[in-house]
Amino acid sequence: MYENDSDSIIEVKSSLMNEKYINHNMKNFIENKASYFLKNSRNLPNLELEKFILWKIDRNRVFISMDLNCPAQCKFCYVDSLIAKRNKLSSIKLAKILCETVKNDKRFTQGKQGTTIMLSPFTDPFHENNIEASLEIINFFSTLKNFIDIATRFPLLKIDSLSPFSENILINFSLSSLQDNIEINNQYLRFKNAKKLISKGYNVTLYLRPIIQDITIHDIDKIIDLAKDSGIKVITIGGLYVDEKILHKLSSINIDISKYTKIKKKFVLDDKEILEKIKANDLEVIYKKLQNSGFNVFYSSDQRIEYYKSKLI
Ligand code: SF4
Image (cartoon, rainbow, N blue to C red; front, side, top):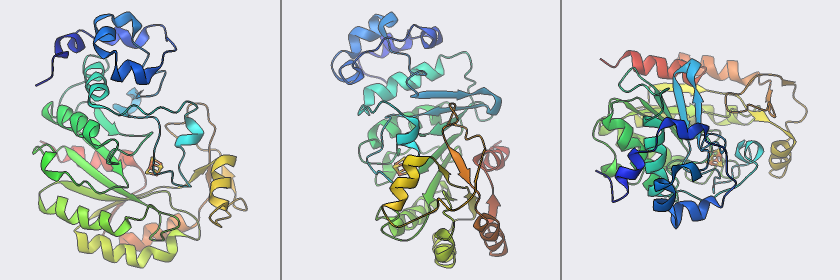
């Protein structure tokens, strides 16, 4: 299944996660010296410290990112606020290392009700830069039957390369608005792609996140129509987390949300508590509207995952 370095990769045990962090040029590590470092495991960088891997044991999840940078640069995105160091690393080799590192970690449980694989908090898994690495990770854990929750703003153009084990793969198309100046200009393609994936038997939901107060609500009727037409039945909604950087980026596209109340609410990926949540009254209104339109609506990815995992035999 793996290339030449597979034996070396398999030797990488979970103890490596605790190795002393070595500040190294990771791009060179991945692209030029992978074999060397894999055979000399003490030199591996700490993938957890770097945030390529984030364990949330209390929720039985592991977040995996194949890069720590997202080329899409959405104005509301938290990646630049939470990641100090920017890397451009996405590669098949890194994907294989991430897979084996997680699989060999003692915190990992294999199987349908085992560890949920979350892709990917710090880059978009279906962006063209990441798609090969993402498919490697999805297909790896799909074979182990683990549940895989994917959040993306890009259509999956290589559907035929996706694992045929569709029941444990959940693709969530994220969306905040239908406006081009707010979203990446592929909003309608996401719905078209959702329709295609659903017709092939994959689980697809809409992830209305972040809901931007006074913005998302303007498009909600049209979004409901598009979701229904594509066959989506489940929608998760989520609020907007900000810091000064995000507020500034949003104001550059004439969205001023600094006037709204910010509340302290822990964001699962924000261990340093940099971000605050905007109190958005629209969230409730949208929730009710979606529910009245016949969707199964969740307030969090936890609820969504629990719902889908409970259906797995
Ligand atoms: S696509 Fe997702 S990860 Fe990438 S910039 Fe936009 S919100 Fe951030």
